Image (cartoon, rainbow, N blue to C red; front, side, top):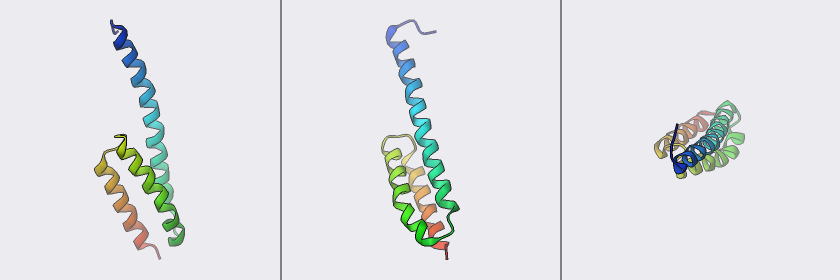
Length: 84
């Protein structure tokens, strides 16, 4: 157990931030999953900017790595391109 007040505060902050990050990472995964499940190209094109915005925000705040965000966006673009 931590002995310093600052260490105890850091533990509290880390728990709170981990919960916050987990929520947004899960929301992002659900949005990506939902977009991949769409079979209509027009609907997927409409939804893509909102998913892209989520990915960019999470990469900016270091919840996910910027390269992971880029890879996901690239994969989603490829998915949308293959839709008929």
